Length: 330
Ligand SMILES: NC(=O)c1ccc[n+]([C@@H]2O[C@H](COP(=O)([O-])OP(=O)(O)OC[C@H]3O[C@@H](n4cnc5c(N)ncnc54)[C@H](O)[C@@H]3O)[C@@H](O)[C@H]2O)c1
Image (cartoon, rainbow, N blue to C red; front, side, top):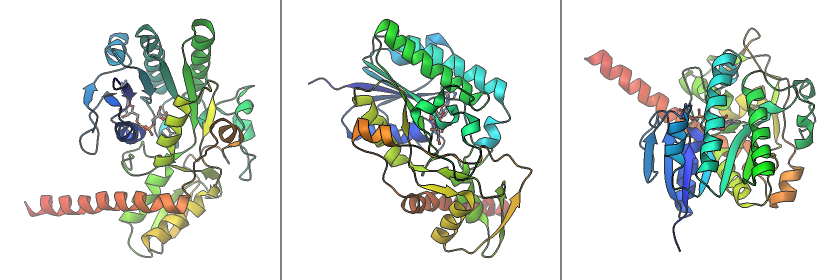
């Protein structure tokens, strides 16, 4: 039997890196594409091409000869980044998504998966910490996160139209806060779990770490191994409408900090900074439909997933210490 070829866009990024490894284990031929080479070591993909997917000729080159497209490339980051860059994010992601979807259709790929986000859900449904989990049907009438969320919602619709009007098989997956090793942990685009791991790894015992907001805002977090398993299962399913992919283990940001500090074995003092963006007040995934469609849902607890994540970030932070010492010794 011929080997199936998968294209992973955003393969130089966090989830893309893990998805490439997952698909290789499943026996796929994998082409990874990104605007930059992976930040943390070489990509294991059979072929890795640096392309700027905002442009249609790049998207056509990326899609040539592949069977399935896992489209993860996006201009994105944590809450600080996505609330401070609406124009750039909306422009870049519109260009990437529209061109990649059409290039995949022209190349006659058999399936196309779009990585959407919980940021598409109405902000008015996320105004308290003990929030009701977000069911897929709650997306409309819409009031998404400005810029990033609005563009994701439009792209979900575009996938639906391509499917209804032109019979092109699409999937739209709404990720809820993914974390794990190989994620950006510094520089302004990092998300809460990685940022907290970094702050605690850099902090001395009993030291103070800064938390954005009052710490009582809530989220659910999904370990990246569950994320790539879910992506693959959804792609292979016969379900084309948008689907949540997340856990429904709701925690406050303070509880997340406590779990990381316990994992690190390091007592710390929290200082809350109310001037920093904290996003919606509460957000959780309703997995009812995911369970119905797949008979499966993410199952790695936050405590389990934080252990390898913290260890990885700590190794990087220790490496920084070594580099600083070497530079100082020169
Ligand atoms: N990580 C999460 O918690 C989360 C939550 C919801 C949705 N998502 C979505 O999942 C996908 C993957 O997220 P991630 O966490 O791996 O992010 P990431 O930033 O690590 O990966 C995205 C990759 O896209 C690449 N990219 C950006 N612009 C590009 C361009 N013009 N051409 C080619 N590549 C380009 C980036 O270089 C990056 O490597 C994104 O679409 C994101 O919006 C992620």
